[in-house]
Image 1 (cartoon, rainbow, N blue to C red):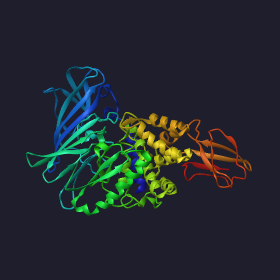
Image 2: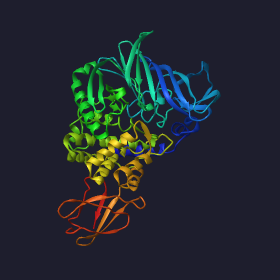
Image 3: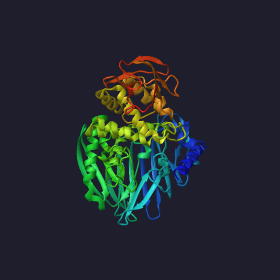
Image 4: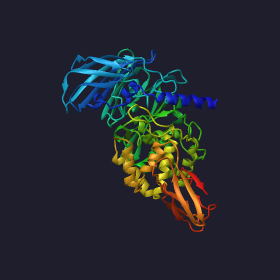
Amino acid sequence: MLVTFSTTQAQLMKAKDIYTKADSLRGELTPLRTCYDIQYYHLDVKVDIDNKFISGTNLFKFTAVERFNQLQFDLFDNLSVDKVEYKGKALPFKRSYNAVFVSFPDYIEKGKLDSFTVHYSGNPIQATRAPWDGGFDWKKDSQGKPWVATACQGLGASVWWPNKDHQSDEVESMLISVAVPNGLINVSNGRLLKTEKIKGGYTKFHWKVENPINNYNIALNIGDYAHFQETYAGEKGPLAIDYYVLKENKDKIAHLKKNANETLEAFEHWFGPYPFYEDGYKLVETAHLGMEHQSAIAYGNKYKNGYLGNDGSRSGWGMKWDFIVVHESGHEWFGNNITARDLGDMWIHESFTNYSEALFIDFFYGKEASQAYVNGNRRGIQNDSPLQGPYHVNKEGSGDMYNKGGVLHNMIRTMIDNDDKWRALLRGINEKFYHKTVDYQDILSYMNEQSGIDLTKVFEQYVQKKSIPTLEIIENQPGVFMVRWISEVEDFNMPVHIFDKDGKRQLIHPSSKFKLMRFDGLTKETLKADTFNYYIGLSIQ
C-alpha cells in the first residue's frame, strides 16, 4: 500500500509540474497587480452556517503605484462577484479562472489613494482535510453546536474572500467584520473592537488588525467559545494573551497557558520581541490541527504534548511541550513578521520555524537536547525535490522544507560556533526584515553578512538542490589526508567540523577540489567527522 501511495504521489507531482494559465494568474506579478499597492481592507461578511453560504463585501483601499485604468484582484470562480462598486457606480469586470479584471472609467494617476468595493456571495470550497487543503472547515462540537473555521495557506485567501491574493503585497491594516448566528462567537485576527446585534438573528463581531498582515493569515473561527485572558510581561511591555476554547474544554486551559507563556519567553529570547504587540496574541481552538493565523493562532492539538501525542524525532524531547503552540507561534516571527514574497520561498517560513522548535528545547533543556531533536528529525527527510519551489506559479517546494530546513540552520549555527553571535543573528533578522516581505537572496545575503561565512554554495545545495553533499577523505599516509566535497553544486564549499586525536572539534574548509590536510595522530579508522550536526554523506578511505 505504501508503494502504491508513493507512486501515486509521484504521478501527481509530475502532473502538477505542468503549469496552467490559472497558475500564472494566481502566482505571477503582472502589471495589473503591481500597479496598485494595498493599504487597507474592510472585509464585512455574513456566514449562513445552515446553508454553508457566505455573503458580503470587501473594501479595497490602495495607492496607485503606476498610472492605470485596469487591475486584477482574485476570487475563486465558484463564488459570485455580484458587483464591483467605485464612487457609487458599478464597474465592468471580466473573469478568467480565479482572477477578476476590473476596468475603471478614467485613469487613476500614480500616487493617488483610491478605493473600490467588491460585493460577493456563494458557497465557498469546503476543506476536506484542513489545514492541508484550503477552504471552510464546517464542523460541530461534541454538543452538536457549529464549529467553523477557515484555513487557506497555499491555496490562497481568495478561496473565500476577494483580495489581491499574492504574498508580496501585505495590507497595512484591516477591519474584519463577521456576522454569525446569535449564541456563537467569531474570533478573527487583531483586537475585538465591538459586537453588535443585527437583523435576522445574527451578531456581528468587528476585529481590527493594526499591523501588516498576509492574506492567508486572515481567519474566522466560529464556535461556542469560553474566553480567558491574561497579560504577559514581554520585552516591549504588557502583551494581551487571549484564549478561546470550546466551553466543554474550559477546564483544560492551564495546558495552553503554560505552553503559551513558555513559548513567548523562549522566542523573545532568541528572536526578539513578539512582532504584533498592538494586535495581541491569541490561541483559538479549532477542529483542524492548527495554522499560524497572525495574532489568532488556530489550535487543535487536543491539549497534548508532542504532535497529537507523538514525537516525530523519537528523541523524547518532543514530548516535553505542545507542538502546535510552539510551532505555530514560531511562525509569528518567521512567516508573519518575515514573509516570503513568493510561495516558492515558503521554505523561509518553515525552515526557521522548524528550527524554532529546537531553540525552544535549547532554552529550557539545553543545547545537547536541542541537537538531539534536530538529529532525530532527519528521519522524516525525503530528499525528493528542492526546498525552493518555482516562482510565479504559486507552488511550494518540497515538504523537506521543515526538517531539512531545520537541519540547515543547525549546521549554520554549528559552523558559526558562537551561540551569542547566533542569537544576535536571529534577533537581527527579525529586526532588519520587521514586517517585510523577502526572497531567497535577501535571506542568503543577510546570513552571509552576519555569519561571516560565505554560505552561497551551502544554500544552493541544501535549498535549491535535492541531494546532500558527501565529504570524501582519502588517507595518503597516517596523519595526512586528501579531502574534498562531492556535490552536484559546482565549486561547492562548506566548513565542517572533524574531531582531532583528543576528541576536540576542529573546523576545516574543504572545497570541491582535493586539499592536502594533516590530522596528526589520526588514521582512516580513527578519523571522525561531526555527522551528528552536519547532514552530509561521508566517505573515508
